[in-house]
Image (cartoon, rainbow, N blue to C red; front, side, top):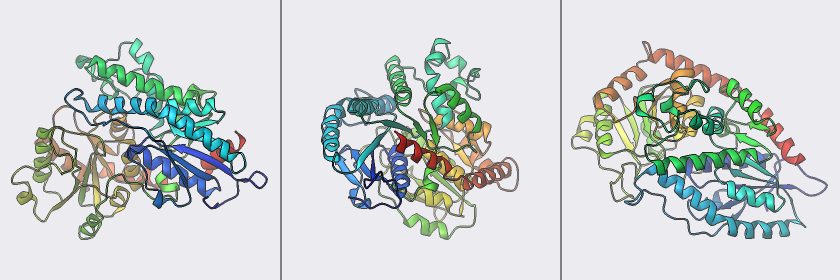
Length: 466
């Protein structure tokens, strides 16, 4: 049994929180960061997990781990399902169905065991695990839902049916730049959509389940903070009304927990960064799921090469669609290494929080997943955004249009000249727009550093009162 760092005892019994993360990199880290915060306040922690992307229990000796044994199907696109978005969402929905019965069995056994041990306070599960939240409530366990995205994104998800009714969705090519009047600053192109009716149906179902997961729980936990999204959080609290909202971010800054990387990190890149001039390096990473075509990879590579800037590029196995084998890095175009020799380094995966905090990094080309966006905000690093799916387009819109700490590349195919121009604009610290983006990014970094644990205290009190 894990030891306590604080006191949340009731009589002589500690309270226990149960956690179930969605087993994807961008969802695992925030859940374990939350676990670290709660454990530091004296809660015992039990983590339920699938065998797919299972966490390394040896990294968390103070926690208990309960595997939920289900055969989780492959989530990679194949010939029958070439759409990466649909394949991923199908995988999540299948995981919900497959986990329901074995989770019920494991949870019931744990509850019986805990009658004479630590009192179970609640289950905190990812909003994409609605079926498991339902199971917990049926067994009498209060639930809280963790959404690993922004407040703005959740508001957009909640409005999704109305946006469909009003004709914004499914998105039409001729209307992509039209503003969404009910949800500024979104444009139609910033909303999740698909030209495939089958894929759009799956997107709609997944979003509906996320909203239901929050609406039927005893609270919604968001990895964001008021200084970043003050209006969005105020509106969300009005709209949810009966569901308390806890903005307890930035979790990676407030939590004592270390990163839980599914992929092995190449820490040698930090030594390379030590040899580079301050704010000179462009860091490039498109996350753990986003993918691109082989043509886009070639254009990306030559745009980086032609920019003349030092770079650190995370070239993840599986990044390029249809480029087997999945276990190897995609091949770069002939001549790329010769053109960039001595100026850049390419790795399979990087310790991103440390990279972004390194003084040599002056810009971040990102897919705009929420974790990456938040980590860049907290590091004061301006961004170059190329979103792929889900909430990434909306995140990029906020980076470019609201916070004005980066720039967004146009949608469609990557073009090397556009990449070269965008890198120049981002990395030019002496003139506009680069200097302005850098100044505003540092201001946001300062506000993020002032975030207190007051909302964490409110969450702890809420859990103890359930």
